[in-house]
Length: 245
Image (cartoon, rainbow, N blue to C red):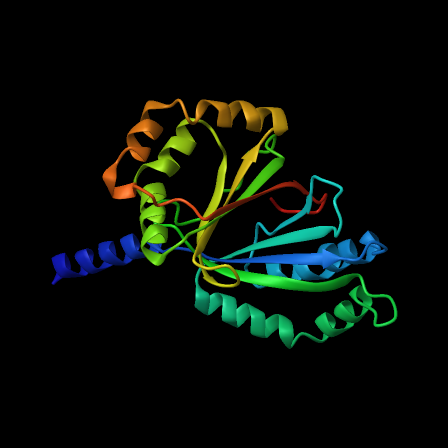
């Protein structure tokens, strides 16, 4: 009986530590005349503290490095699982402080943002939990790969799980998260985030990638042939001063 109890406890620990996270990525589209002060106040003074009180930490808030219009703000939230996501969403929705804060954020006569999109993701097996980047890595790259078929998508995810994520680590790319989109637009697709010290550091790191023997081996593997991609979208991001990533 004692042996059985130990085995059950061991199995529970394995499942606990192997559990994959669940991600939400919001993209806010701001007006040209939007007041960043109101936007920042909402996330800095209300949203992030409220999420932290619900046990959700390391929330990332980013602006695009470019000055293109429309300006966009990206908010990344990692949950331990979908059940927690639903519970926290319900808690925030029913918080009286949220109603007051959201009214101040987006006044009817002078709104801050046009709308926001939300995408939901399951973490990759190869990186089941988000990794907080090193303090000096404050230049982020958000990449989305759209696939031409479900089969190609599945094999591209396998390619990451079975070697490409390890290669990123070897090249010190600063992997933050990898997610399989389960709700949102332009599916099937995956999204991942990398952290670097600067654009120059990013360019130098990526320059080593195509020449690496491990990448040559992966891209020539028949299992991954024609797995990527119908479209690749890349956005460079800078954290807001109050961002927890």
